[in-house]
Length: 129
Length: 189
Image (cartoon, each protein chain N blue to C red):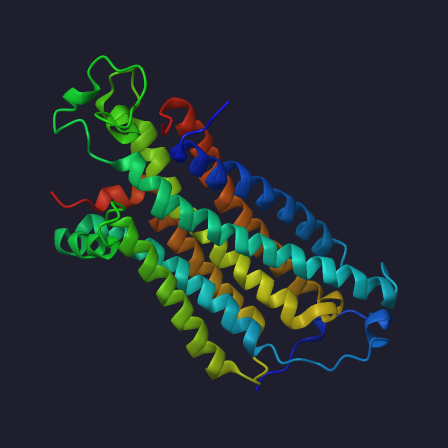
């Protein structure tokens, strides 16, 4: 179990006056990492939708005849991945004091990659012939 | 003064939800920013936190409403294939319509100037990146609620929450700005 660094903190007597108990950082790390995983999944599904006709058709099958097209599958699955990741990580990190900085940077890398995956010049470059 | 069903939904998706999102973001950002040691009394912290909780959860909720209505209600009207493979239904059209030239048909057909890139870049990016906003906003709302006033003493963590909050706003700005431009160039009617 890693402890929070002193650099993360500053004296706050007004908070001390409230008499609040410390809380472990695990649940916050789970929320951050799940967000990074969800955004990464969105970017990945966006690229895969272009790269594979079979996956494109499968993503499209999630639209339930609403006319949404493959966007239905890409976004619904990304949300499911995000929610499942949050639940699993939340259980795994419950009550634990983890290195929040390490998990934030991991989440940021995943998030940036996900955003890049949603950028048209990038995902369209994967388009199947 | 009247709005069609389609126009009413674009108003709900873009204008009403967008305005509420902006208000919640401004309030949430101000609340997070001022959550600093030495700024507030214990009584003021309690009062400030209540408003911050409302602000961050409203922002997350509105972001979800925006992307769900946009994807599942408005977007099918935008992308309907009405004009035929050669876009002949859009021939001579000055604007899209609901019978033979959808907004996507209209833009891709280039019948009114070089409009295809509005779809290829603007809509393609907007429809994906917008979904990042509710994911980040929900994570921030959880972190703010979980730590509460403890964030005052956690300078780095508060900065991270602000970065994520601004990230959610940035994704929404891309979606909202392209939505506004697209509704100008090829409105859903």
